[in-house]
Image (tube, rainbow, N blue to C red; front, side, top):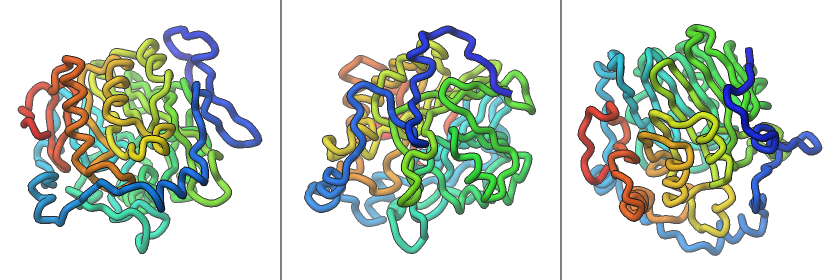
Amino acid sequence: MAEAGSDTLPDEFTNPIVLKNGCYENPWKGFKFPGLGGLLKFIFISKDNSNIPKSQELDKTLPVEKPDFARLNNPPPNDIQVTWIGHASVLVQFDGLTVLTDPIFSQRASMSQWFGPKRFRPIPCEVKELPNINIVVISHTHYDHLDHGSVQQLNERFGKDLAWYVPKGTKQWMTNVGCENVTELTWWEESVFPKNTDVKLVCTPCQHWCKRNLIDTNKALWGSWIVKGPKHSFYFAGDTAYCEGFEQIGRKYGPFSFAAIPIGAYEPRNFMKNQHVNPEEAVQIHEDIKAENSLGIHWGTFKLTTEHYLEPRSKLTEELKNKNIPISSFFTLPHGRVHVIGKDKLSCDE
């Protein structure tokens, strides 16, 4: 059952989403929808600086670890344990909850496994190896965030015991796949988790867009998510450009114990700036929402854009140093690494 926010923001903050002719629009200052001309330039003219090497080199620079399943199945009761599955898929365990974000376990982020962006780093584990999951949050409908095969596998394994949370306009897609326990929210709408009334989920704003076929552009909403437990709070930024919404989220719901914030897929900047943040903007989000700890996601898994494949990590470190923010407070992880925030040591290249 949805409930009103606990803190007050002006109406222009709490109700910014625009629905026009059945399609959602970004309300943010300066937003411009990515046009066909920019897309063609991106595909045919932009220089590709990604320089992704062969697997032997990738095993050194972007290692994939088999998760420690003993730790996954027995998370610490008083701490936050996080595992980066890859891209925007993060397993977060806290306050007796296990939360999974934007699950994609498929080899390609596409409508078909025969074409489309392919992983250049393999999945660290399969759905059947995951611990019991309580909640899955979905940020939007793009194929690299809403993957049919992964949703189907998770539903087959966990069924009605798994609670799905999606932005407005996506519930029907989920039920068509067979998911039973689906809650659909709009921006700033809250919902109490039925199995534990001390847990609250909130759909919050971000700047992006939705599309899965030729005729459904922005028929569904995009969003970020808050999962607030009795001791800790988790913020998932989803897939986003930078906008004033993050400062609003920080004012209304911050600080956050932990956040997962995208740092990759941002070049060429003139085309990507209205849909993806770069590392500098990711650090600004970290500050805006008042995150105590953040993980850099949405990089190092699929080749979607033209920046060097390791640049998101190095640029993140550079920006943290420029702002005198401890590197340990906004970190990256190898795929599959099980990490307890504040307890496990991080190496300098993570």
